Length: 187
Picture 1 (cartoon, one colour):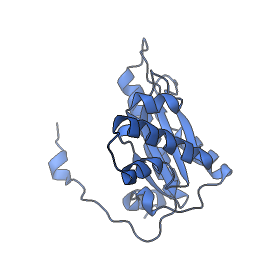
Picture 2: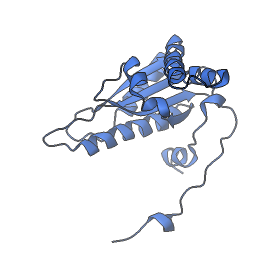
Picture 3: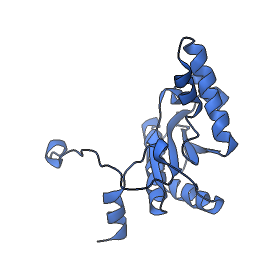
């Protein structure tokens, strides 16, 4: 079987809590981002960008999540606030894929948004091909303007995904996949 087909058949997400280090080295991060950016991009707009959360930056991002969450939920218990604080600290690397889709005279915004989704998937597959575990997440903080502003995400930008990358031991459980008979029609 072709290596690419085998990778696509066996790729599974891993929860960030199951991830350990080391994360990708700088040269591996460059490979990952280069491959992630090799997606369909009508008009060559690059309607997306990356934010890397690594090292102390992961803790700073978690502090932002915890701060915004605790202000919105003042009665929440300390365990939940601590969980928010650790949002970005479980995996050694978190890559924010930021959609910059905007009105364009020839390129529909929907195509630009889909391109950002393709970036997320390419990043996931590339991480797995390099031997890392990964998962594509959003969560409440991906939609909260107070968090986004403090992470440097402009008002006209949206989070396509936070891709968590690290190592995870052991096999990952597969989820139920749709039966082709349920999702395929012929015209």
